[in-house]
Image 1 (cartoon, rainbow, N blue to C red):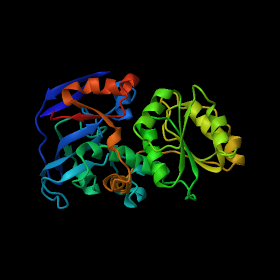
Image 2 (cartoon, one colour):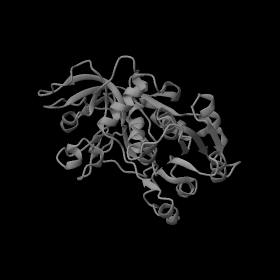
Image 3 (cartoon, one colour):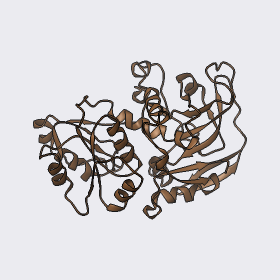
Image 4 (tube, rainbow, N blue to C red):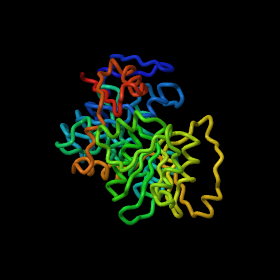
Length: 350
């Protein structure tokens, strides 16, 4: 089979390797699509290390073979692969929150070989946890890759308080993550303001029909002042930091309404994680600042249901598709703003 090996900084090699053998409790998946994630860009640039040669964690495919002892899956099942594999023993894993594993979860594409290959071996621990999730026939393999990032959005919203219809959400950052936050906020009955540093992504968002109510171009307007103007000076009830920026985190506190929920959804670089925030705003305005890290199976199923029911149309996000041999070109297209790429898919059988 063919697999893309990360052999150095910004260097992939597509190699012919032996197809994995399916052992007891394991499942072999024929990969039909694997989407490029922003985290993969960091891996490509050697800003984040992985323990295996093959990355890729937004995966869909078909069960090629199952090992002895696997009862919930069958050859030919259409599936997606949950990224996170918890220990299965700690209190958070036992209550279905494997992304909060007390012992530190492992992940497909990080500690286990990922989906930039023609076949993926789902390890016994992943199969036992239920990481191999069946998908309905009306969801394409390309659409199915978006379940993973969408499940992360569901997780990001999970600690927020329930609000009355018509609350205001400000999403800062108009990449795929910010766009999916817009979609999810609308599902919860929110009015949504999308904020970005420059206009091209906002124009693209409008062109594909993203259901934001207002668009703020930071190169033209002060985002804090504009959010206050759009909310009768009260501020936004929910703020999503969907861009890795210290400024964005500071803006979030400044544009927040009293009792607002704020998600630092996009983290800061590991080598520069410290910033200065006005904690008096958190204290006196009783703001709720949350982190977000990956997702769990329950959230995968929620995201899958929203896509399968067509409540959220994710087809519009799929803009580019490449064969495995052009994986470097695929990554470059996602980084090149001139390409207008939103979601880039690798098809290892093209």
